[in-house]
Image (cartoon, rainbow, N blue to C red):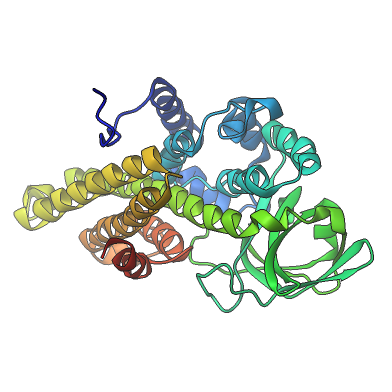
Length: 376
């Protein structure tokens, strides 16, 4: 008799194992930390040649159905790509583009899916505009508006933390329409009519923009299915949390590498500082926290989309990954002494990445508050 209560095991499928291996090798080759620092000062939002390589590897279509040119896999497989990207502080639109594809899959019309999902698989860049200046993590609380006028929608309001908006071919934007949340699609022409301001954010490896929508007009056909909006917003929130957790688990692994390398090379009082228990023990604690967070991450990936169980797992993963990267990067900064507090220390790049990821879609305390209602 089959055990219907059996929980998914935390194991890689063949596809996940292959993707993890390829992504780790690719990121190590393309994104050494010195190149990451160079990208911070570059004029472009990201390296387009690398982006096209990622598209050629099929990464943009991993979670896109085969009928639209994708691989027909899921977000669990995307996690195995995003984790090594976090380890090497990769700054590309992969996460935002993946989430835009998810929005189209969940709530897009047939015409929108047919037009945009194949384009995404081939390298089109997506931007997700769900956050507003209020900073409310409830995505249904919207100040941005859309007003119908014949076959047109006129938008107003401001969206914040829209990564890679200036380079995007399309954006999915949340607005209030007729008193309810709605999602609309902006193509490149519509984005060009919006006002964009580059934001100064803690994580300088990515480009974030404030997008002012006042006066932007789009066809009413750019409205995603209103009947599916609420479920789509919930899905996007959890999907973003899952991918952010993957980034943070990778970041924790990366900063531990930085720490261990320093402990093995820095001498004090004629001894390598890694020989001191006061440094060894917290480093082990950081490693254990990272491994625990990865367990939560891959369990969440396995049960993603499975109702309340999936939501609980994702929120646990987000909270655990936030704490793991915060602790590992903080210890790394401290262990580097005075140098750790300077801009030249690589450890602080990971702390910056951790702060960005933690406060997107809710910090650890926020998710634990929600977990209290789900569990008790």
